[in-house]
Length: 151
Length: 275
Image 1 (cartoon, rainbow over the protein chains, first blue to last red):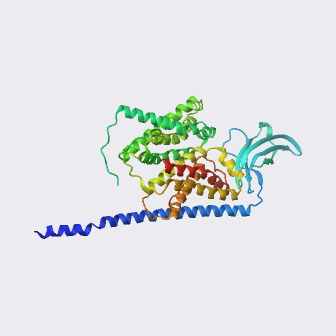
Image 2 (image 1 turned 45 degrees about the vertical axis):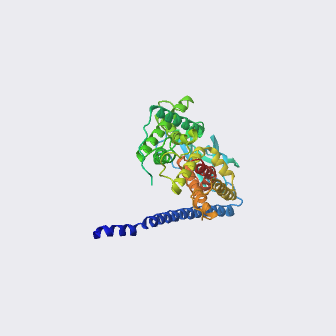
Image 3 (image 1 turned 135 degrees about the vertical axis):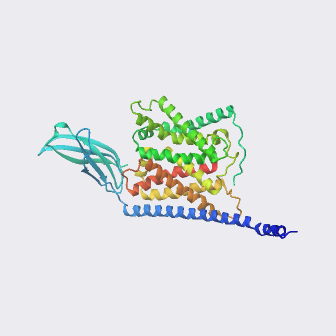
């Protein structure tokens, strides 16, 4: 019997337990990933609950706080328009928000345009535009929030 | 490890049946979205980069679904890619046909709108085409090789379930109206309730890992929490991709995510049981 032939079974015998060991290592690695994924998900959920609780404590009696302001004009509008940003700085949403643009010539009101914005979420902004009549040159536009509904 | 078996020759009859199932699945799964007015509007005005991202991300997702629960047993990633492409084509064709029948496809002059409306509907319809095998044939995904199994295969199918339900609901106005009406305390209760319902599904499914020494809370940490985490992530992505969070503050965006994550986590948990 050659030394090589006697060595081969011995090597095989040494290697045989390696397969279950490798399987065990792979399984423990997968299990570690499973636990890690569970832990990360748990942390995300906890952070979410903590943030909502913080909002709940700080906005216990929240109401919408609406403010409208003129925004920079669009790059190349098809016709004259007055862009606006409607912001809700309050902790509660407002729906059916009525906004208007009054065109004034000194104390005289030359015209009024109205829009209804479907909803303005809390601490969020909505942008839009009033179309300005061609004969409005020289008039001063005044933007106003007229009212809203609770959601 | 997957064992490679020789592919079974596909007869023309098999092909026709497979395509018929794919079309039927695309219609059944896609019809709720095809009949939602918000989707018609979104298809016409949604930011094109987001729409492109949606379709691009759908391809690896569909390949994974084709591998795990496609409309026919597959034997390799090339076949999965072929089936995913076929499902997407069925989704595009089916969505286009239905929108044309409803006269909501848009005019040929507005090609951008036509493409947008079809593309936004094609992803859920393609998903339906692939899942048709499970739903219409009762195959249960048991035959054919299923190499993409185990824990991460299960999570993938949960992701698919979450994605499907959140895609159905994210474009609707109601998600935001519910979020507006809720206080943060309602939100916290909904998080706890969603987690509880997810865990009920996990308990109902039972421990199929074959491990006898697994403690009861292990399934909560390994399946319920990651399932809900996936639902939250998918909900946030769906709302963003459909432009529902544009201009929103962090608080209300999170609230809308929590609202959408409720149906999404149900979809995830149900997918784990059904698929």
